[in-house]
Image (cartoon, rainbow, N blue to C red; front, side):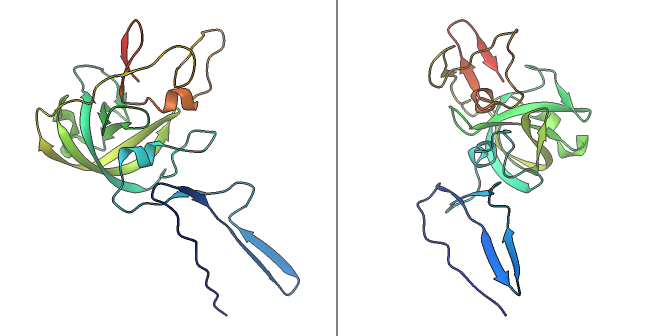
Length: 199
């Protein structure tokens, strides 16, 4: 037999979690495991960087890991700013806006993707696979479209070293990889009382 159910309406951007329970012939089943819920976000438009970066999970993993996504943003740091590689390809940083959860790092699957030629201030749309590497959310880019050059880079967000919305780092008590106080600032420009950094 076939059964159907209706998920109640929810406001846009609401996080929801649901599971199904069945019982028949003396057998009980539940999917997914209700003690480890899967979260879903109500969307009425295409994906944004914030959608793939934000996560309610304690381990900081994106809910889109393994999925192929298309998102847009502006390059906040290129290979002339930070020389970092992932899978032997140069890594770049992209943000869709200033503030928490709006940035992501990315690298091209090969030189033919053309990601290596992008520069800070380039507005781009990329399609790629969401991955988690050493506590950092990445997009392994399969293709990219340059929208325009010379776009305004999202401004740096001022953060403190203590209190709400801040980061605190002590060498003797290092944070767990992917901890949310740091995870939310990946690839966006932040400004501390003393230095500018790009995480």
